[in-house]
Image 1 (cartoon, chains in turn blue, brown):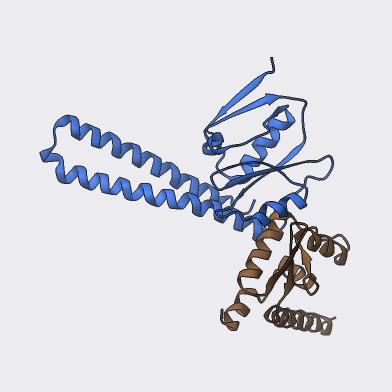
Image 2 (cartoon, one colour):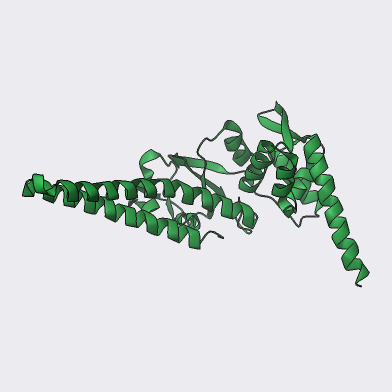
Length: 179
Length: 105
């Protein structure tokens, strides 16, 4: 039976695209490979033990991927590993020179800005939810039972925690936007 | 889009954008552009897929290039009249820079 390795919440741990790419590349070099990435791979990924591979991984984001987007990457020799929502994962095996997909600072920053903007939408959404929950708790605390108040406080705390995490992700990508 | 706005967006132009636009004086596709740019810069610039796709999208949305046809699933592009005008202005700007620095030698 082949050996496997399960990784949880990888996109939540390696939030900067370049870090995610390097993490995947390191795993491949250690002989841990994955052939298909799907919608739920951001939560759970199962890697199989193989011979060590020297892959260059690319994390790209594209909200409305047209056919020519996929074709362009394929023409350049990139293998489509899969996609999680609008995040596309590509790879290319190499020996000497590490291949790049984004070859100037402008396009690297644009890719990172696109990722940051996608996270920013969720950050704004969760911040609004947190603020609404705080206001609702304060305004209706007198008419709620202690159990209902506790539920509201817990829900608000979860939303605030996630909102803080998303804010940290935006900050982290912004400060690493040039790589 | 208004020409002055396009001019403001593209001049001065990045080296990547310049060579892609320069290459598209003749019809070409993404991978072909990379090969052409590598050839005309004698191997100095080798464009990646992500950079080429992003640049083509930007140039197309601002009307500097336009898709012409699709051959074997490869979308072909060519420079437009506006693109030619912007390219000429950029070449003139580079020529002026060169002339100024030459006068100081």
